[in-house]
Length: 285
Ligand code: FAD
Image (cartoon, rainbow, N blue to C red):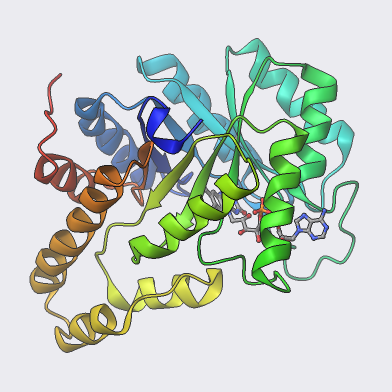
């Protein structure tokens, strides 16, 4: 199936906050984002289980309080099969049907990778223990994973996750639509037949974005970087320019056949909703 043939899936991602104030901001953002009628709200998970309790709390809160299903992220590095099994059993009893299955990055100071080395092993494990109960999302990297020795091997490794039973993928964020379309072409050549939904990072803060991008291997194209740098501390200018750039990116992706969008909301609704409206989609309760 080509990417064009899949139904479009729109979703939003949160991270589990540390403070009560952060939690209340997240709840407000979640309520506002309901207006998009997303397919699901996902919640990140700290590698090595560092946010385990907070992730579970936010996931179950979403699941209980909104009509939008909650989707926990789950990382496997530095974890054991028994920990993962226990957590997934808990999610299963709470009605969770979709998981974002990831390797994660080795937490600093830890050396033992545990019982899983790569995300494809987690996908295989979930399939062998839980059959088809969970819809499994995996990560994809149109600009390639920073640790991949070369693009071909990274694609091969992506294929391993699909062969292990992933249903769909969400990409790392990127600002160059050609990277996504090239990646999709490469997947089609390998007969990788799952939807690959672009991950979208709205632009609010240049310093933070530059730091994230260096760490995760996402490129900020020079012209965007230069413009953002030129705005200095002018948050309104950064926001307005970022909104133009990211809305245009989303438009190109959807026009080119992307099977939806996954918004990295950073627990704020404003920019995601503004992009949504720029795309001409309705917001209603
Ligand atoms: P993998 O698919 O295992 O790939 C990791 C690296 O190993 C790649 O270089 C790949 O080419 C290579 N590789 C894969 N399989 C093999 C193999 N069998 N043999 C040899 N090499 C192999 N991180 C968090 O900590 N928490 C989150 O909640 C979180 N959510 C994310 C959501 C999305 C949509 C994305 C794109 C990323 C997310 N991340 C999260 C970041 C992610 O954990 C890191 O990018 C991590 O470095 C890789 O995870 P992965 O699941 O892609 O790993």
